[in-house]
Image (cartoon, rainbow, N blue to C red):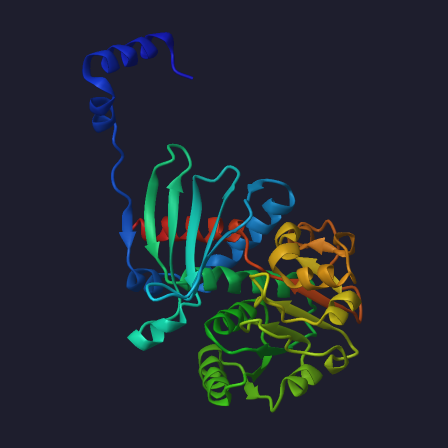
Length: 351
């Protein structure tokens, strides 16, 4: 609240100079632009893990403002599309910035132009003044980092040290960050499967060399599930990728990150029903996550959600308690975007 003297001075300025002059003299500096090369050269999934873990804890305590994601569908026509745009954001209480993210995906006609199908920016905003501080041209790089970090948090809190064989169904960019994040939790033996075997072979070779851990290729998704204690799924989510009777009876933790739209589902409903189901944010997973399919089929209700991930992080509820199936449904929250946005600003603004 401004004082009466300051208010009088402001009124005199407006009366004398008009609003245009006042706006000109109080304009904010332009936000800094960080290009893709700068972002990718200076941020790693390791930078994100602790901040994302803290963000989940704050989310469970009600200390994050996270609106539902906004989705813009770009129908294919002679002048546009096809494609999708997702807008997410959030503010974590008592932090100096908040973040809004624009992510464009599924622009598959870009391949004809030699361009990737996705792009995006993070806008990090001063939480005191509301002025944008930085625009990060991340083209989903920061999104993948914070998704990988969430995978690490899920593995840390929802599996045990003895669960050291980790499977990856889908071997794209997100899988690489999941592998890097999992390696930050504990050493493991990796198993990879993808419909494109050459892609799976590249993933196994590169991750094995980078992480110094053994990776092998599975002949099928069933074989991978037969032998994995922890399973990361990160596919386009157009169809389910595993079956309940493929899973180890000794218990398995499934960390699913492929479903982020109402048309996607990686995990069959019978697996969800049989599991200790943990959401990143139930109001979101019920609309665009794995939970959505089970709700629509009438085989689960929101009361069947065991916990949100932040409740496990906070110790409000235990994670693994025996030979059970755990499904952690990661749709990606604005809290994670706010966390990685703060990390990116803190690190890159000093350059």
